[in-house]
Length: 483
Image (tube, rainbow, N blue to C red):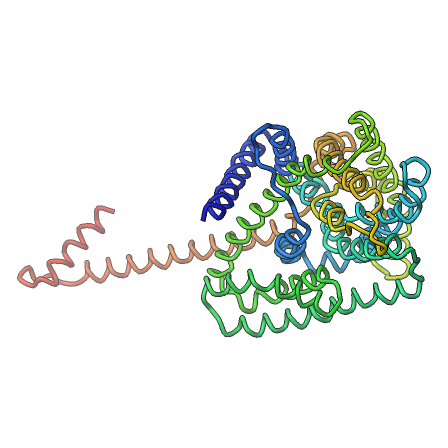
């Protein structure tokens, strides 16, 4: 009982901290994920603050599915489909470019690293977390095409990164190198299997929702769906991430057919609160992981570790930038020449901002912590603690430094105020408001005509003062004359 009370007190303390710190961050106009990470980092340095671990199973099985589901729910299928070529360039090709780039660079300057460990490290840090980036982007008015690319990348690159991680662990543990053909087959099944399972679960959900019209029941059902989709996708050895994303996109697109307006408002309120709390807990817990990150490192000075962390972060930022400019031009060529889309050639300032917002988050840290402790021969996994430290350093540098500098970068590049996200929505709201005003005007006219008819009827009708009905009519006549 004491242990349960202790866990409950810790959870309540974390939730209160998330609400208080996020509220303060919004008052000072700073993205709350950045402030929460700094808050957690500072708390980890205090003497009597309890150390709270962040196990990979908690991230992948509890936190990730609902966050992916709500992100897919809020994503426009039309924009996602329209930008699929550019999103694939970021979510698939950039992941492997990062892994191979780190594999090439790490063997030259990271102590104890060969190209296999470098590839593994690159796979761990390749997935990005666009929560902080998109929250800043919406506030500063970044162009919507940039926001769409960031959201699409964060939806899909987790699956690609976890596949690269699987190959990296196999190469280090077994000392073998997977063939290109096997990699293509496994990636194809991850995508195709996740797509089929996600569509099947989405179809079942939409069929069941047509028979239910009860807010609490439908909200509870929506909370179960992402976990069912993720576990089913993983159960058939496909990508649980893609399964959840496809299911969320499918159900969101069909939701107008089975969600009543009242249920939709209730569900959105619940999911907004849940998304905020989960994201807040994640970023606080990231900051609190510093003691766990440092406890396994031996033989390195703190100044040397700081230098390695900063240098590694610079390498990752440069790798992303090196990919962005040629890949953006290539994606534009494919979209205009092959897909035949009317797509404006990307500008250099927009490409730079997309490259600058490659922030890492909890998925990268969970991937680092999920590395096995030993090899097949029983020896310790090489450089495991150092990989976790480099991942943690990259998360801090990209979230804090890049996150705080992003509004300034957007203003310098003159991208602020170009967000056209609400263009169509604003036009739709304008039409709805105009229709409501016209309806109210017609209703007022009809009411006025009705009152005039009543007035004429009463005024033109003789009144018997002995009749109660006509005494009331007399009062109405007097009222109408006064008005």
